[in-house]
Length: 270
Ligand SMILES: [Zn+2]
Image (cartoon, rainbow, N blue to C red; front, top):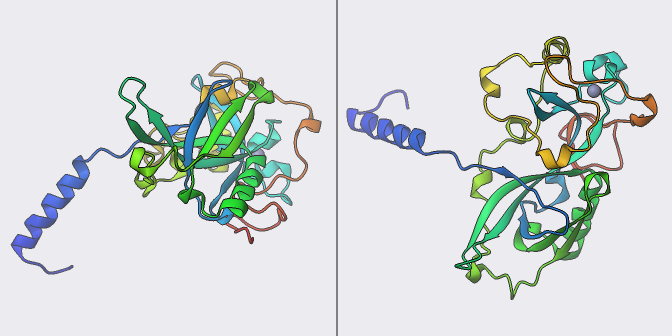
Protein backbone atom coordinates (compact mmCIF):
# COMPACT_ATOMS: atom_id res chain seq x y z
CA UNK A 1 0.00 0.00 0.00
CA UNK A 2 2.37 2.74 -1.20
CA UNK A 3 -0.24 5.56 -1.12
CA UNK A 4 -2.94 5.76 1.50
CA UNK A 5 -4.97 8.27 3.47
CA UNK A 6 -4.08 9.70 6.84
CA UNK A 7 -6.99 7.75 8.39
CA UNK A 8 -5.59 4.53 7.03
CA UNK A 9 -2.18 5.53 8.33
CA UNK A 10 -3.63 5.95 11.79
CA UNK A 11 -5.45 2.62 11.59
CA UNK A 12 -2.26 0.92 10.50
CA UNK A 13 -0.34 2.53 13.31
CA UNK A 14 -2.95 1.40 15.84
CA UNK A 15 -2.93 -2.16 14.57
CA UNK A 16 0.86 -2.20 14.63
CA UNK A 17 0.84 -0.94 18.18
CA UNK A 18 -1.71 -3.47 19.34
CA UNK A 19 0.08 -6.38 17.71
CA UNK A 20 3.38 -5.19 19.14
CA UNK A 21 1.98 -4.92 22.63
CA UNK A 22 0.40 -8.34 22.55
CA UNK A 23 2.72 -10.77 24.33
CA UNK A 24 3.61 -13.80 22.21
CA UNK A 25 1.98 -17.03 23.26
CA UNK A 26 4.59 -19.01 25.11
CA UNK A 27 5.42 -22.53 24.05
CA UNK A 28 6.87 -24.64 26.84
CA UNK A 29 8.76 -27.90 27.07
CA UNK A 30 6.83 -31.12 27.60
CA UNK A 31 8.06 -32.90 30.71
CA UNK A 32 6.75 -35.85 32.66
CA UNK A 33 8.24 -37.58 35.67
CA UNK A 34 8.55 -41.33 35.91
CA UNK A 35 5.03 -42.79 36.19
CA UNK A 36 3.25 -39.54 35.31
CA UNK A 37 0.78 -39.25 32.48
CA UNK A 38 -0.81 -36.46 30.47
CA UNK A 39 -3.65 -36.06 28.01
CA UNK A 40 -2.31 -34.45 24.83
CA UNK A 41 -3.25 -33.54 21.29
CA UNK A 42 -0.43 -33.74 18.73
CA UNK A 43 -0.18 -30.98 16.10
CA UNK A 44 0.09 -33.27 13.05
CA UNK A 45 -2.16 -34.33 10.22
CA UNK A 46 0.48 -36.42 8.46
CA UNK A 47 4.00 -37.75 9.18
CA UNK A 48 5.39 -35.35 6.54
CA UNK A 49 4.96 -32.60 9.12
CA UNK A 50 7.26 -34.26 11.65
CA UNK A 51 10.58 -32.57 12.37
CA UNK A 52 13.61 -34.70 13.15
CA UNK A 53 16.93 -33.05 13.86
CA UNK A 54 20.40 -34.51 14.11
CA UNK A 55 21.88 -32.57 16.98
CA UNK A 56 24.73 -32.29 19.41
CA UNK A 57 23.85 -31.46 23.00
CA UNK A 58 26.29 -28.97 24.46
CA UNK A 59 26.42 -27.08 27.71
CA UNK A 60 26.38 -23.31 27.36
CA UNK A 61 26.50 -21.32 30.59
CA UNK A 62 25.04 -24.15 32.70
CA UNK A 63 22.27 -24.91 30.23
CA UNK A 64 22.11 -27.73 27.76
CA UNK A 65 21.47 -26.61 24.21
CA UNK A 66 20.73 -28.66 21.12
CA UNK A 67 22.91 -27.58 18.21
CA UNK A 68 22.05 -28.90 14.76
CA UNK A 69 24.88 -30.93 13.22
CA UNK A 70 26.38 -29.43 10.06
CA UNK A 71 27.55 -32.72 8.57
CA UNK A 72 25.63 -34.57 5.90
CA UNK A 73 26.06 -38.32 5.49
CA UNK A 74 28.66 -37.96 2.74
CA UNK A 75 30.44 -34.95 4.20
CA UNK A 76 33.85 -35.19 5.80
CA UNK A 77 33.83 -35.09 9.62
CA UNK A 78 35.57 -31.72 9.44
CA UNK A 79 32.36 -30.22 8.01
CA UNK A 80 31.03 -30.05 11.55
CA UNK A 81 33.40 -28.81 14.27
CA UNK A 82 31.32 -30.56 16.95
CA UNK A 83 31.57 -33.91 15.12
CA UNK A 84 35.29 -33.27 14.75
CA UNK A 85 35.57 -32.63 18.48
CA UNK A 86 34.03 -36.03 19.16
CA UNK A 87 30.68 -34.79 20.45
CA UNK A 88 28.07 -37.54 20.16
CA UNK A 89 25.21 -37.20 17.71
CA UNK A 90 21.58 -37.66 18.62
CA UNK A 91 18.61 -37.89 16.31
CA UNK A 92 15.70 -36.25 18.04
CA UNK A 93 12.05 -35.92 17.16
CA UNK A 94 10.79 -32.47 18.23
CA UNK A 95 7.09 -32.95 18.81
CA UNK A 96 4.58 -30.09 18.82
CA UNK A 97 1.68 -30.89 21.11
CA UNK A 98 -0.96 -29.40 23.35
CA UNK A 99 -1.03 -30.79 26.87
CA UNK A 100 -4.23 -30.41 28.86
CA UNK A 101 -3.51 -29.05 32.29
CA UNK A 102 -6.23 -29.83 34.85
CA UNK A 103 -6.71 -27.62 37.91
CA UNK A 104 -7.21 -30.11 40.70
CA UNK A 105 -9.43 -27.87 42.83
CA UNK A 106 -11.76 -26.57 40.11
CA UNK A 107 -11.41 -29.27 37.46
CA UNK A 108 -10.82 -26.56 34.86
CA UNK A 109 -8.96 -27.83 31.81
CA UNK A 110 -6.46 -25.53 30.07
CA UNK A 111 -4.63 -26.33 26.82
CA UNK A 112 -0.88 -25.64 27.07
CA UNK A 113 1.31 -25.63 23.95
CA UNK A 114 4.57 -27.53 24.42
CA UNK A 115 7.35 -29.25 22.50
CA UNK A 116 8.54 -32.72 23.44
CA UNK A 117 12.15 -33.66 22.69
CA UNK A 118 12.00 -37.40 22.07
CA UNK A 119 14.24 -39.98 20.40
CA UNK A 120 13.66 -40.38 16.66
CA UNK A 121 11.91 -43.74 17.12
CA UNK A 122 8.79 -41.99 18.40
CA UNK A 123 8.20 -40.70 14.87
CA UNK A 124 7.41 -44.31 13.95
CA UNK A 125 5.06 -44.55 16.94
CA UNK A 126 3.13 -41.43 15.93
CA UNK A 127 3.08 -42.54 12.32
CA UNK A 128 1.44 -45.79 13.45
CA UNK A 129 -1.14 -43.77 15.39
CA UNK A 130 -1.91 -41.71 12.26
CA UNK A 131 -2.32 -44.91 10.26
CA UNK A 132 -4.76 -46.16 12.88
CA UNK A 133 -6.72 -43.04 13.82
CA UNK A 134 -6.11 -40.46 11.06
CA UNK A 135 -5.12 -36.87 11.85
CA UNK A 136 -3.62 -36.62 15.30
CA UNK A 137 -5.11 -33.13 15.62
CA UNK A 138 -8.57 -34.67 15.80
CA UNK A 139 -7.74 -37.15 18.54
CA UNK A 140 -6.54 -37.20 22.10
CA UNK A 141 -3.83 -39.44 23.45
CA UNK A 142 -2.60 -40.41 26.86
CA UNK A 143 1.18 -40.18 27.18
CA UNK A 144 2.66 -42.09 30.11
CA UNK A 145 6.32 -41.90 31.04
CA UNK A 146 7.94 -45.03 32.39
CA UNK A 147 11.51 -45.05 33.63
CA UNK A 148 14.24 -42.46 33.82
CA UNK A 149 17.34 -41.44 31.89
CA UNK A 150 18.22 -43.72 29.03
CA UNK A 151 15.60 -46.27 30.16
CA UNK A 152 12.77 -43.78 29.63
CA UNK A 153 9.82 -45.03 27.58
CA UNK A 154 6.70 -43.14 26.59
CA UNK A 155 3.52 -45.10 26.16
CA UNK A 156 1.17 -43.33 23.73
CA UNK A 157 -2.39 -44.63 23.72
CA UNK A 158 -5.69 -43.42 22.30
CA UNK A 159 -7.74 -41.51 24.91
CA UNK A 160 -11.47 -41.99 25.27
CA UNK A 161 -13.14 -39.08 23.37
CA UNK A 162 -16.24 -39.36 25.55
CA UNK A 163 -14.32 -38.92 28.77
CA UNK A 164 -12.03 -36.20 27.33
CA UNK A 165 -14.44 -34.18 25.20
CA UNK A 166 -14.14 -30.70 23.70
CA UNK A 167 -17.15 -29.75 25.84
CA UNK A 168 -15.08 -30.62 28.92
CA UNK A 169 -12.25 -28.33 27.88
CA UNK A 170 -10.10 -30.62 25.74
CA UNK A 171 -10.38 -28.17 22.85
CA UNK A 172 -8.51 -28.29 19.56
CA UNK A 173 -6.41 -25.15 19.98
CA UNK A 174 -3.05 -24.98 18.22
CA UNK A 175 -3.01 -21.19 17.94
CA UNK A 176 0.18 -20.93 20.02
CA UNK A 177 2.05 -22.64 17.18
CA UNK A 178 1.10 -19.98 14.61
CA UNK A 179 4.35 -18.43 13.45
CA UNK A 180 6.23 -20.68 15.84
CA UNK A 181 9.68 -21.88 14.79
CA UNK A 182 11.39 -24.83 16.40
CA UNK A 183 14.72 -23.37 15.38
CA UNK A 184 14.15 -20.47 17.77
CA UNK A 185 12.86 -22.67 20.55
CA UNK A 186 14.13 -26.24 20.72
CA UNK A 187 17.42 -26.18 18.84
CA UNK A 188 20.03 -23.82 17.44
CA UNK A 189 21.07 -23.74 13.80
CA UNK A 190 24.53 -22.18 13.87
CA UNK A 191 27.25 -21.67 11.29
CA UNK A 192 30.58 -23.47 11.32
CA UNK A 193 32.23 -20.21 12.43
CA UNK A 194 29.82 -19.83 15.35
CA UNK A 195 30.40 -23.42 16.47
CA UNK A 196 34.16 -22.96 16.22
CA UNK A 197 33.86 -19.88 18.39
CA UNK A 198 31.87 -21.86 20.94
CA UNK A 199 34.55 -24.56 21.03
CA UNK A 200 37.20 -21.93 21.67
CA UNK A 201 35.36 -19.71 24.14
CA UNK A 202 32.49 -21.76 25.62
CA UNK A 203 29.96 -19.30 24.23
CA UNK A 204 28.21 -18.78 20.94
CA UNK A 205 28.51 -15.31 19.40
CA UNK A 206 25.42 -13.22 20.03
CA UNK A 207 23.19 -12.61 17.04
CA UNK A 208 20.05 -10.57 17.35
CA UNK A 209 17.96 -13.16 15.50
CA UNK A 210 18.94 -15.74 18.07
CA UNK A 211 17.62 -13.89 21.08
CA UNK A 212 15.70 -15.83 23.67
CA UNK A 213 15.97 -19.31 25.02
CA UNK A 214 16.89 -20.78 21.68
CA UNK A 215 17.86 -24.40 21.72
CA UNK A 216 17.44 -24.86 25.43
CA UNK A 217 16.80 -28.46 26.27
CA UNK A 218 14.79 -29.45 29.31
CA UNK A 219 17.12 -30.52 32.09
CA UNK A 220 15.18 -33.70 32.67
CA UNK A 221 15.83 -34.90 29.15
CA UNK A 222 19.53 -34.26 29.25
CA UNK A 223 20.43 -35.42 32.73
CA UNK A 224 22.29 -38.41 31.36
CA UNK A 225 24.61 -36.36 29.17
CA UNK A 226 28.07 -37.03 30.47
CA UNK A 227 30.47 -35.23 28.20
CA UNK A 228 29.77 -31.69 29.34
CA UNK A 229 32.21 -29.88 31.54
CA UNK A 230 31.98 -26.49 33.16
CA UNK A 231 32.39 -23.23 31.26
CA UNK A 232 34.43 -21.52 29.97
CA UNK A 233 36.18 -24.66 28.81
CA UNK A 234 34.42 -25.91 25.69
CA UNK A 235 31.81 -28.26 27.03
CA UNK A 236 32.55 -31.23 24.87
CA UNK A 237 34.97 -34.04 25.47
CA UNK A 238 35.59 -36.78 22.94
CA UNK A 239 33.77 -40.04 23.30
CA UNK A 240 34.67 -43.33 21.62
CA UNK A 241 33.87 -43.18 17.95
CA UNK A 242 31.89 -46.39 18.26
CA UNK A 243 29.15 -44.41 19.98
CA UNK A 244 28.71 -42.12 16.99
CA UNK A 245 26.17 -43.28 14.43
CA UNK A 246 27.89 -43.91 11.10
CA UNK A 247 25.07 -42.59 8.96
CA UNK A 248 23.69 -39.43 10.52
CA UNK A 249 20.81 -37.88 8.68
CA UNK A 250 21.24 -34.31 7.60
CA UNK A 251 20.33 -31.83 10.36
CA UNK A 252 16.68 -30.74 10.47
CA UNK A 253 14.61 -32.93 8.27
CA UNK A 254 11.06 -33.95 8.12
CA UNK A 255 10.30 -37.57 8.76
CA UNK A 256 11.81 -39.97 6.24
CA UNK A 257 13.06 -43.24 7.73
CA UNK A 258 13.82 -44.90 4.39
CA UNK A 259 16.37 -42.46 3.09
CA UNK A 260 19.10 -40.36 4.57
CA UNK A 261 20.50 -39.14 1.27
CA UNK A 262 17.85 -36.53 0.60
CA UNK A 263 18.47 -32.95 1.59
CA UNK A 264 16.65 -31.22 4.46
CA UNK A 265 12.93 -30.52 4.42
CA UNK A 266 12.19 -33.73 2.65
CA UNK A 267 8.81 -35.30 3.09
CA UNK A 268 7.60 -38.68 4.10
CA UNK A 269 5.30 -40.56 1.71
CA UNK A 270 2.69 -42.73 3.32
ZN1 LIG B 1 28.13 -32.65 13.92
